[in-house]
Length: 288
Image (cartoon, rainbow, N blue to C red; front, top):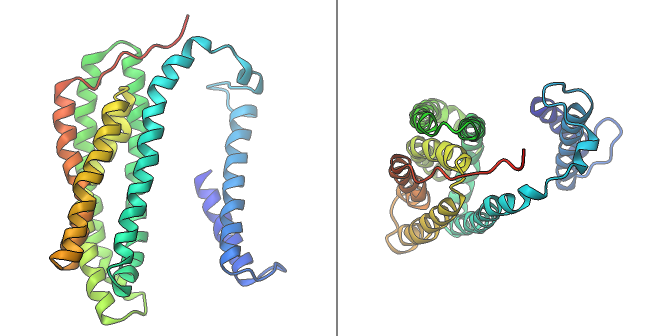
């Protein structure tokens, strides 16, 4: 579904941005329409498969009206901290973007070049994070706490390995990617420093993403994750980034590392949280 949506997005963008295949030339607005079409396609295909084709889960439209009152309280307890955390994190990430935006045109351009590479490197990590949450929840649902703990260590190791792999790939492709853009020498220099910083941070980001968005969240530890996500971002990353960029005027590598320092801190925190075993919460599965 995701691969299909990618090509639908690509085709719709080409048609509406440049006015191809009889479509009006809409430029930036065309990019927005292309994205909307791709998301509608993806959602429609997933829902169609889930409701009418899939035979493993066998979820049907009538199941939307099943009685789940005994799960409402548990659902609210688990999900509200996630919503709050992700909402405040979104504000924090926008704040980081605002800081980058005030560091100069060359820095903004360099960040735009590197952001595509970073997003691509995060795809595999996001997939493993989601699988980590599913595996952890399933294991704990069977009452196997020790096995869940062992799986947590396995996912932590997998996260570190994926981070090293992604960081290495970024270093290898950094020069060809930057060279594909027609930008100033200053932008090229900053972009290379940002690529180096991303390749380093990716080791920690991959590990903590798999733990926070996967294993720990699958264990129901959403309240602590809400606190950790936002404390590390607002108390460490944003102040350090402001100091590095506007007070000490250090090179771009250190500015970006400071702005992403929460990824390093969370990775270390995740190790201690995992070892404590306190992340495993009692999650009910409703009345049998």
